Amino acid sequence: MKKILVTGGAGFIGSNFINYILGYRDDLFIVNLDKLTYAGNLENLKEIENHKNYFFVKGDINNNELIDFLFKKYSFDYVINFAAESHVDRSILGSEVFYISNVVGTNVLLEASRRYGIEKFIQISTDEVYGSLGSTGLFTERTPLSPNSPYSSSKAAADLMALSSHHTFGLPVVITRCSNNYGPYQFPEKLIPLMIINALSNKNLPVYGDGLNVRDWVYVIDHNRAVELVLEKGKPGEVFNIGASREMKNIDIVKLILTKLAKPENLIQYVKDRPGHDRRYAIDSSKIQNELGWKPQFDFEKAIDQTIDWYLANREWWNRIITGDYQKYYKTLYGDR
Ligand code: NAD
Ligand code: TYD
Image (tube, rainbow, N blue to C red):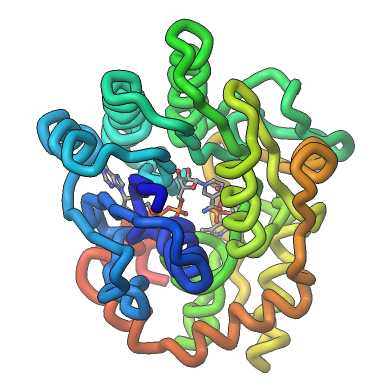
């Protein structure tokens, strides 16, 4: 039985990872360490909360004593670091917590992994560390880092700390850089769930700038299948891009959601652009495809339908979120719309 420390496992991608992997494997024991920030939600893990190979710990990756205790107690074989502040708009409103959780927190995990020894450390990074593309070209693993937002800068800094731990100390680190994810349990501050929920509530759909920014979308389970492969076969010191080659303009996604929900296009409201808004992301994922045999399995049209259906079927999940603090956040960003 291999033991994995999964951090940030109560968030969108981490909870999908745990549900996916415990759903079909019984050779892994998972300790999920999550601080339960606004984005962490134990409801995401209801299906597996009593699984014999699962244990949840509420805590901060910056808590050195707790991290030390957990490494001593469990002798982890692997660490998968999903924990992060993950939203660009919030990083523009206040960057400090991004630096603390994403950079300092990652370093705490790297140092503990070095002290105790592990087989592999996966740092879950993002394509946003590469900056922004013009209308052509793709990010490869050799594209220079050029992050533009406080969020992507903190992720790039964490990547460099992780890679330096490999280079200097031989820590078996692998970095994954994935494009924009969508799927169940995504917090409704990100484009797709925000637009679905606003449309269902007959609220305006705030599209930044001209709506022509491009993101490259991948279904969350395809991302997590890639993470699983990297855990098994990814060579330490390497970086793997992950993406499904599904570029979409924001406005086209928004219109697609409205069509699917039979809502009118006059709900769309163009709003002031995000400061420093990256124009286009697009991933070349040929390395993980050729070296590890990964391929996206989910077709965008079907998986986006499935995702919309999930939000339709899980109104209680997002209704509980959009009261309280969420409203304060929403008002700060979008005013009284
Ligand atoms: P999320 O915001 O939904 O979840 C983050 C989780 O981390 C939450 O459960 C939160 O409570 C936890 N967390 C935050 N700070 C913590 C700390 N200091 N200690 C312990 N737990 C903490 O994020 P997500 O969308 O699931 O993203 C997960 C990871 O994937 C992040 O590292 C993000 O940078 C990366 N990523 C996300 C996307 C995307 O499209 N969402 C794409 C590529 C990479
Ligand atoms: P987001 O989901 O925040 O992901 P990221 O900025 O990390 O790629 O945003 C995706 C795209 O959608 C991005 O170009 C910004 C845009 N966007 C809007 O137009 N309106 C919104 O309300 C949000 C949240 C995002």
